[in-house]
Each structure stands twice: as structure tokens, then as C-alpha cells.
Length: 332
Image 1 (tube, one colour):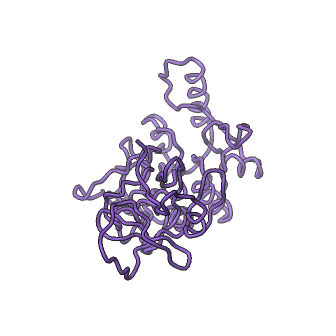
Image 2 (cartoon, helix red, strand yellow; image 1 turned 30 degrees about the horizontal axis):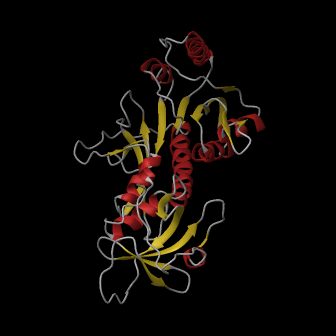
Image 3 (cartoon, one colour; image 1 turned 60 degrees about the vertical axis):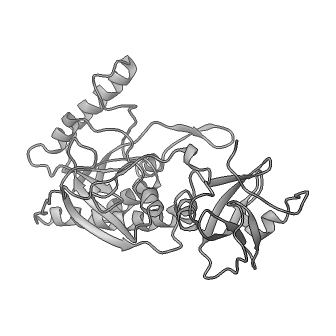
């Protein structure tokens, strides 16, 4: 099949590679414009663009697909993309973490005569966690399972009919990085299965999403990173794992801002008397025990400013507290 592919990050590139490896022809790649990144702030191509260039796939990078943009340059880019989609020969569109809204007129092109429409890979079990950050919000909320939905796109926010759902369990020590990688693999395998069915002339069943159980995964903000030690150990553990790798959970010991990368709920901790939330109670082999609003959290991996990730015990023992006590709090 001939595919128009729209996506930007590595999650999308993995699906793109799988589609290519399965023998389908990607005739056009849509991806976001190059962004400045790294210490030198050099322009950097997206993973989708990098794969496209390696395989001589034409690339378009409009800043918007809305032809009614008030910005003449953006309007011209959108018009060029629209015209290219009108003239190009393709069978279906696949959209994965593209980052731009597809207007109805773009979806209409994908649903033209003889075409199969526009399919999206969404990393949740819809209708739960529609929106921008389904992986992180699933971990933060303590969900026991998540998965991938292949969805026939419409103009709503992740509201289209599902054509394939594959679930997986979320492990107790899962963070957003590891779950992202597992879902990317599952999503790539799932979209190839759908495309193979279509190529074989088999119909896919479009199932409307349930009305009940709709939740929205709001975009992760840096302002969410700071740990509130008045929360329970369970809630803080979920947030540390959900915010790994971005934005990284933080807290302050005096003037030092520390990042928290991994943690767990200890099986048992002999607490003679409750301490103030945020107080370091002691150390294990590698970790540090910290009092929470309810319960104790064992922090396993931390990072000082300008330093490398290391065990919490090693990291905290380099702090020099006048009274020997280490106390974490939110920045005033």
C-alpha cells in the first residue's frame, strides 16, 4: 500500500520503520519543522524526517495545516501541503504523534474515493486518556494497564472509531521512558497489522468509543515537577516514575535542587515516630528513606545540578548539612 505518514518523535519513527519494513511504500512524510536543541541549540531534524531522508522519502514540514492562518508564510506552507496531498497517489494516511491538528479538509482527502482514510496510533485504551500525555497520566494515576488503539481519525480530539485495541500491563516499577518504548513497539506492530488487513482486501471493523469513561491527558508542564511531600508515598512514587524522563521530579535541600529519577514503596520500614514530610529518615544499601504525608518512600536514584544520575544514598551523602539532617521542601 502507498502511505502518507505524519509524525514527529521517536514513537512515530518506530511505526514508520515498521511500515517500511513490512513492504508498504511511504510516498510522503509530514513532520514538524526542525527545532533547535542540545547545548549548541543547533537545528535538529525530527526522527521521522531523519528516516525519510535516509530512504529518499519526500518530506513536508509546514508549521500549520490550516490554510486560513493569519500568517502569510504559514498560510503558504499549509496551501502547499494541501495541494501536494490532492495530487499525490496514496491509499491511506497514518498519523502518529504529529503535533499538528489535521483540519477536516485534510481528513477528507484521506477519505477520498478508493482510499481507506486516516489512521492514528494512540497510546492509551480509549476513551481513557485522550489527549497529549496518555503515557505519563496513566502512570501518575496508578492505572494497572494501558495499551494502543488504532483509530480512524475524525475532527475531534482522539474521538474517532477504533479499529484495533491491544492492551498491556503496567508494571509496578514502570516509568514513562520504559512504558513509552513498550507502547511504541506495540503501536508499530498494531498499525502494520491493520495495513496488512487492508492490503489483503479485508475489512476492518470500526467501533465507536464508549461514551462513559472519557478522561483527558493534559500536557505535562514543568511546573508539575516539584514534589509535594505532603502527598502520600504512593502518589509521590507514581509522579517520580511518570515524570521520568520529562520533566524529572524535583525537590530542594537548602539551596540545592535535586532531581528524583526512581523510587519504590519499601516493603517495611521501622518508623519509631513520624517525621516532618520531606525529612530523610535514613539509608538502605543504595536508597534513601524519606517521610511523606502518608507513609515512607525509598528513593533509589537522584541527580545533583551538573552531576550524573547516581544512587540516592551516594548523592545525599555528598550534601553537607550543618546539623546532619537533610530535609526536602518545595521552593519558596
